[in-house]
Length: 298
Image (cartoon, rainbow, N blue to C red; front, side):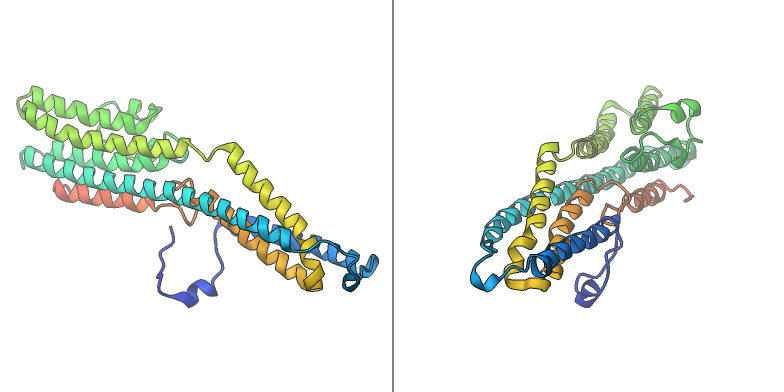
């Protein structure tokens, strides 16, 4: 995720987007420019249409009407994508809060001398956040967590759903403390509320990750933009002649750029420049858990 100053206008105006989006957009924009050049050249130099005598009946009015509808569709598309991005951020914010509260409650319940228990819970809370980062990208990956506190380390590494397994180990540890008489039923219920909250964040993130924008809707927008841009030179050439070339390229840049931004932010858990900084959030959870439970940071 890019850190920036929203008040610095000139940095936005004169900067070039560094995302994968531009790698797809610029080559296609120049292809559209070549296509428009071909249309204009044939009309002006080969066919030699006389626009002043009315031989050319097409005008820009139809594209104005269609452009208005296309603009509404793209606004809805962008709002839908941003809503998914913002919901993902709220879910990770809730995870931060539940992780801190679980660490605070655990710190109050454990004896100060229980270094093993404190390290287990601090590591478990941190591991859940770190495993969620990779779980929402490429799936189970135990290489990013600290499995030294678990007795069944091989089972942790082979778990198909690592966040589930980590929460299960935390729950089992709390139940064991209750069995040993170190916790009572009410205290167990108290910490379980935050474990439930962590699982709610997990489920919400999975819902966003596994529910893309409907295929038919995404396909329709792309076809709509394609037909609009491909026919646009025929509408502009009457009034703009050779200036139709940069005009079409600029309109293509705007329309396709908005669509590509929507595609990029609708899945906010990846590694694109506009995605959420989940690694930084997970690192914050790690530092908070170790500090609250008074375990040396590692």
